[in-house]
Length: 309
View 1 (cartoon, rainbow, N blue to C red):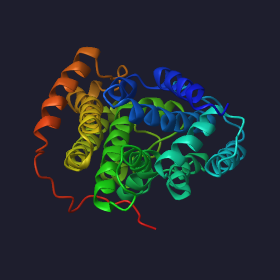
View 2: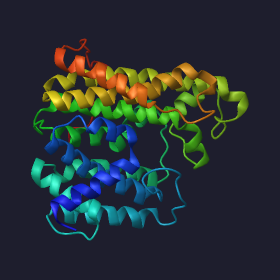
View 3: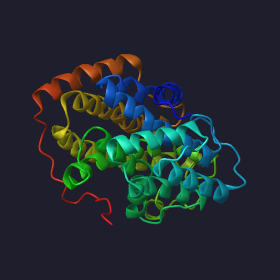
View 4: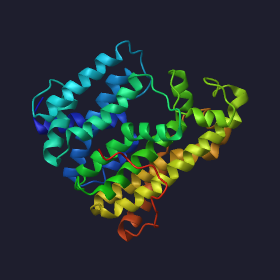
């Protein structure tokens, strides 16, 4: 599949199945940007599904060949970026949006590194390790999305803020999905956090640790809130409709972290999500914020910064 219209239709179906929140926010972009966002999403979604044995997210399957899958992802990505048909629509989607927007092999490689970390059964030892992981699985995607929205690859300060939004999203996801990750044999809570609260490795989901787990959920939510605030400052540089979409997504995803924090010990009794009425409320709020285009100042001093090389 190499026809652009067909690939856009494929990407639209992919985002409809894979992310209701992101699809909801993407409607606010102008048509060209919206299509490009869908195209990039389709590649990210396919890579994630291949790496985790999923179908547009959902429960992770058993993956017996993680390194082989990773090699396939890298090979198909390289072909797509070279302008060659890959035989996989999602990778052809990447090829088109990369050529239209100037996405680079380095940008794609940073995203793929996140899948490599999971393939190696990686686990964060320290807080900075957690941020590095969040960068590769989400912050690097934020950088690519910003370029798709018209930010120059040379605008490092703005790309840092775009990265911050990805970090905020991933920190919220980690906070929400602690129980699901544990069921899949994964834990993204840093060892130094667990040690601080005297939780033994692999014991964080035990009922007697629930109060301590709620405290870590609050830590994650507080960190997500900082990075969300930083990202809002960067949205100033975006065109109006892109700014509106980004601010809407920030509020919608930010509510996940805020709900984890407010739910305390009950945050993992059932899956947390942002309701449709709340999504519409954030779209309305984001419209006013995008028009005003005057976010509260937020200094990045002390925040983790993405690697430059």
